[in-house]
Length: 250
Length: 328
Image (cartoon, rainbow over all chains, first blue to last red; front, side, top):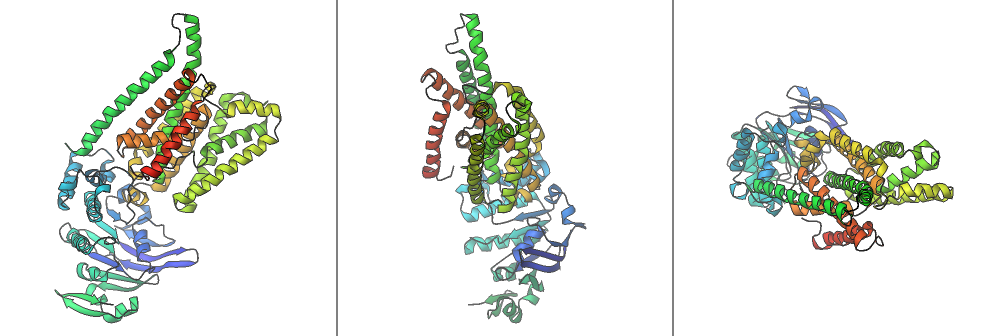
C-alpha cells in the first residue's frame, strides 16, 4: 500500500496535509501522535471509511477508489471503535459476519471452518454462544478481532484498539496484533495513543504532527528523545528493555 | 447445535404460530356475523369486508417493513418513519396535488392515477429530504429526529394553510381521500398498492439482503464490503414508498410501526431481517384486524381502531423508554 499527497480538510481546517508514505508489507506499523494530529483521519482514508479530498492511495497496484467495495473487503479489514451493535447477536454470529464478503449470509462448509478457526485462535470457544452485549469490553474486543481474522484479509487495520481496555486486556490485544503479523503473515496497521505499546509491539512507527508526518521509520529510529520532544512537546526518558526502546514521561 | 441455530428454529416455529393466529383473525373477521345462511347478505357483507381486510394486510406489511428497515438504517429502535413526518409529507403532497389541479381534474377523479402521482412525488421528495438530512447531519439520529419533527409540523401547517384557502366543496372531497380510515379504506387502489409493494420488494431484493450487515453500523458495513451510501439511499427510497402505500390505503397510524417492529424484535430476539420483517407484518395484521374486530363488534364503531393503536402504542412507547430504556 502506497499513500501519496493525502489531503483532508474540514471547513477551513486542514487536518491531513500532503501525507505520503509506503506501508511495509508483512510488518506491524503504528500511527502515533498527539490529539488532532491526523492519524485517525489517515487511517479512515486508507480504509475507505473517510473520503479523501486529494491524493492517491495505491493498494495492490490499483487506486483504492477503483476497488469494488466487496472485493476490497477480502483484502483489507478495518476495526474502529464505533461498534455499538443494537441487536441480539451471539459471538459466533458476529464472527460469521467476517465471511460476509465471501459468501453473503449463506455460509459454506469452508466458511464455517474459518469461523471455527478464528474462534479457536482468539480462545472464544467458551463464549461462542453468548450474546455480545453480555460480554465485558475485553471479551467483546476479542470477538471483533476474531471476526477480522475470519475475514481473512492480508491487511488488518485497527483504530485505537486499546481504548477502554485495562492494562491486562490492552497488552493481550497488542500481543495478538503481533501474532497476526508473525504467525498469519498479515500487514497490521494500528492507531495508538500509548506510545510504549507502539514501541514494544510494532516494527515501524509513523508519527504525525499537525496533519503532517513528523517521523517515519523503524521503531529505534523514531523513538529518540529529540523526536518525541518534537512530536509531543514533553520530556521523555528512553529506557532499553528486552532490546526495545521504552519511554518514561510524566 | 449452536445457540444461533436453535434460535433460528425457535423463530421459525414462532412465525408459523403467528401466521396461524393471523390467518385465524382473518377468518374470524370475514365470517363473524356474516349470515352465511342468507347468500345475498353474505356476499354483500364479504364485498364490504374483503377490501378493508386486504388494505389492512397491505398496510401491515408496508408499515412493518418500513419501520424495521428505517430503524436498522438509523440504528435506533424507538424511531419510526411516522415520527419523522413521513406521513405528513404524504398528506401535504396529496393536498398540494388537489390544490393545484382541483378536484375536477382526472388527477383527482382517477384514484389510481392520483395514487401513482403521490407515489412518484413522495418517492422523489421524501428520499431527497431524508437522504439530505442523513448526509448533512452525518447520520446523527438526534438531529434527524429534531429536524424530522420540525418538518412534520412544517408540512402539517402548510397543508392546513392550503386547506383553509380551498373551496369548501373541494376540501370536503379531498378529505374523503386524505383521511382514509378503516371504515372507508381506499379500496380502489388495492391492485396498484400490491404492484407497488411487489415492485419495491423486487427492486430492493439485493439491498434487503444487506440489512443484517447494515445493522452493524456504517463502519462495519463498509468494512464488510457494502457500498453503504448507495444502499442506504435505495433503502430510504423503499421506506418512503412503503409509508406512502400504507398512508394511502388506511391513513396515518402513527404508533403502529413502533409497536409491531419492537414486538417483533422482542419476541424473535434476532438480527435476521427476513424473520423480523415477516414477524412485524404478521403482528401488524393481528393488531389491525383484532382492533377492527373490537371496534366493530364490541364498540359498534363508536371507537375507531386508530384510537386503540394510539393508546396501546403510547403506553408501549413509554414502557420502552422508561422500563426497557431502549434496550432489548
